[in-house]
Image 1: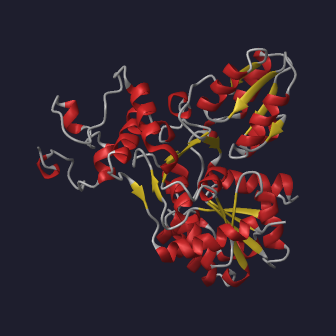
Image 2: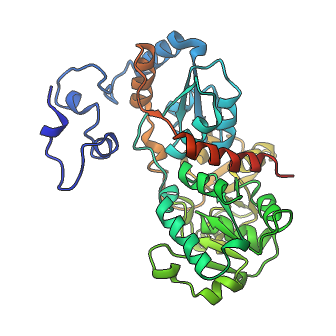
Length: 396
């Protein structure tokens, strides 16, 4: 079998699992050349994939628990024991101590959270290691440490509390826990800020890593002004912010965003209103501030689902969130009009990497006794990250 060191990789690229998967040189590289080898990914055109997934799932029984995020493909969702948003799924994993394997059909930071919250005997598997999150990747540990030093130099670190969105790496969650902060979701971000400014006694919050959720929560739910918010850019010296501006700010927003929700524009809202009279525009709070202002409703993924589910027949919705979920809602409600907010089709490219071939490969490998793509957070990081997650669970 060809060694990874024999592959013609681009200069500077190490043959790590993630690099190989990103380059299409993962464990299916041999099968693409027509060579059979153990552990090769099945072809996407294999007509037996569904039956193979069912057989592997049956063989594993209660030893495996499959989680499917709302943004996953239908071909994957059909095999999920539970569907939901990232934190709900991590909680569900922790509530299944009898499951030896947690197969997380989502992205990397979600699998990390599941590993943090589950017991030591449980092993979390991500079917494709290249399923990351562009937003989470916009805040690295070193960048955030440097930002904290900048706050310290401005004399405000001691009165600043970090509040990190669930869509962040374990390292950022650990940073948050070490500095006495909390994690939040899109549905409890307001409660997290109220806690930080109230019982926690913060003069300002460092909100990581999604600037749009932070801004929308601070301004629309906490009553702050846009001038109370300042954007910290990790790619500019001092974050591109003067010490005086940091001292005046109440919310320091990390310059990060969701690649899907960030692409919606106010023009999309205007366009859909012109095309569909009486349409209700509902968007996720990760959308830009002007899009949220122009929408009729704003809410988390779960709230979007609940709103469309509860609406009467004949209702019309334009939904500003990931396309897989919007299509699933439209299919589930043929008596309602449910359309994607933007004319340009956009899947979450990294979430979409979890497909049926990868799921089959992961399940069959586990059934054969081979634990693949295990996600494991180091104990020190996990301890502080759990403290930040526990603080979120304790929010009033």
